[in-house]
Amino acid sequence: MNSIRRRDVIAAAGSLAAAATFPGAAHAQTRWQVATAYPDGNFHTKNMRDFIEAVQTASAGRLQIQLHSNASLLRMPEIKRGVQTGQAQIGEILLSAYGNEDPFFEVDSVPQLVTSTPMARKLAELQKPYVEARLNRQGLSLLYWVPWPPSGLYTNTPLESVDTLRGTKMRTFNALTNRFATLAGATPTLVQQAEVPQAFATGVVNVMVTSAATGVDVQSWDFCRVFTPIGFTRTKNAIFVRQRDLAALPADLQASVRAAAAAAEERGWAASDAETVSQQAILAQRGMTIGTPTPALMQGLARIGATQADEWVAKAGDEGKRLMDAYRAAVA
Image (cartoon, rainbow, N blue to C red; front, side, top):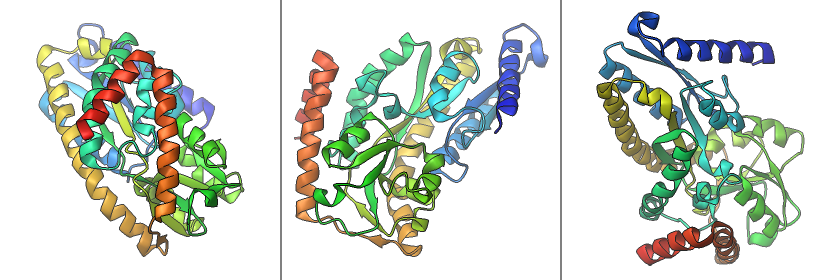
């Protein structure tokens, strides 16, 4: 979207939100805008559409919600601030991409900390109060969050060990994957999902760590030959609403939004597990080799993960230590 069109869309969204705050405006119909950076075929976006449909149905026409997918309204780095300032009423972000704001946003991105769905659920349960408190202080309210399928490594040669990554140019998507690349001897480059194919085509990067779902989204078979599933992380997308816009709704509509969000969270977690199998199968169907991680690779990843967990606790302070201790005790 060019800058003029983007400004027009943002201005229109702001006007609609402002109109909804006045009695009788828009014939008592409130209109919300939703910003997400993910394409229509992604399971997160499909889940969001189901959430929107549920809310609109429950509202009996009183609340209309328009979804802007694939970064068509705001790019992912702009979405959180865009909701805070009223350019959209709901936003969806990869929460760990905002780890520079607060370490509690990125704990699910510590490598090898979470290697199963039960572990991911336990971490989410313990992490949620900290994240909700931080979003609330910024005028936002968490509606629901859903994990990505487990991440794996995309390469053009089989991965024998972490040393295979040394000297490569790794596409990263947050501060912790940047640090992982550095510890593995690779050169990190932060690349948004929509820009991944171009980054590979131009030689900016030549390996990446991400989920099979993202691999399908970006058609990774065009530039990578091997996908090695390693249970790297279960990073979560967070879907949040501007508090003042939610509070402006009648009480029954607020309850409907919360109920639809709770249903979307459960549906999304189940979809994430299903995507783990189905999207990896698509990679294989498209000609990619699905590698089997070697013991040497997993041992190297575990060493890096332990280092990054310690670094995260040091950065997160006493609250971070309490969270990490509680999590480790729960999954021991």
